[in-house]
Image (cartoon, rainbow, N blue to C red; front, side, top):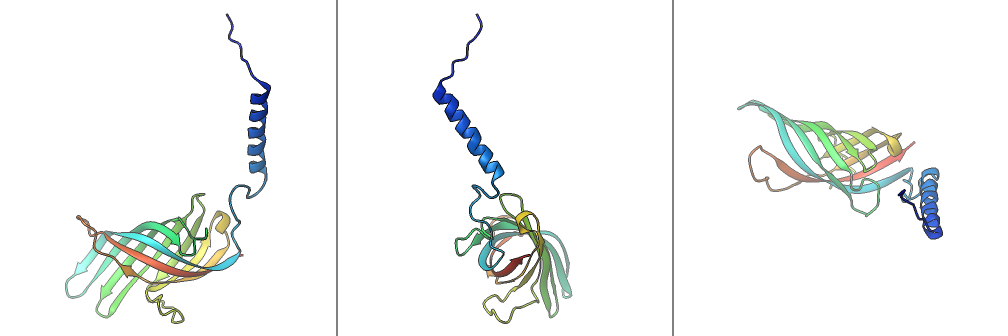
Length: 184
C-alpha cells in the first residue's frame, strides 16, 4: 500500500503565508532588525572586563612589562542599541618603569551579527574636557558591516574591582566610556 499525503486548504494557506513573510524579510533591507543605526552620536557605555596576563618581564628595581588580554561585554548606559551587548577583546601592553606607568593597546567589539568596531587606546592620552574619564582614550579607527566608515574618540575611566579568586593573576575592571562617533 502506498502512503498518501493529506493536506488541507488551511494548512496550505498557512505554509504559503509563512514562506511569503520570510521572503519579505529577506527582500526588505532592515526588516525585523530594529531601528537603523544613526550616522553619528554620543554614547555612554561600560565594558565589563576580565584581564588575563599572558607574558611578563619583571626586573626588580627597574620595571615590568606585561602583555595582557582583556575580554568582556558592553552595556549601553542609555539602553540604546549602539555599543550594547557587544563582545569585547583587547590586547594590551602594561609598562611600569620609574615614573613611566601606562597601558597601550587595541580592542575589537563585535555585535551579534558579527560586525566589528576596531580601536586603539593609550592611558597617557587624557581628555581634559571630561575629567571623570581620567584613565585614557580609545581612538576608533574603523569597522565592518554596519560600522564600516566609523571613527571617533572614547575617553574612558577605570573602576577597579576586587582581585579574582584563584591562580593566574586575573583581574576584573569596569571601564566606562563616553564615545563620540560618526559613520561616513
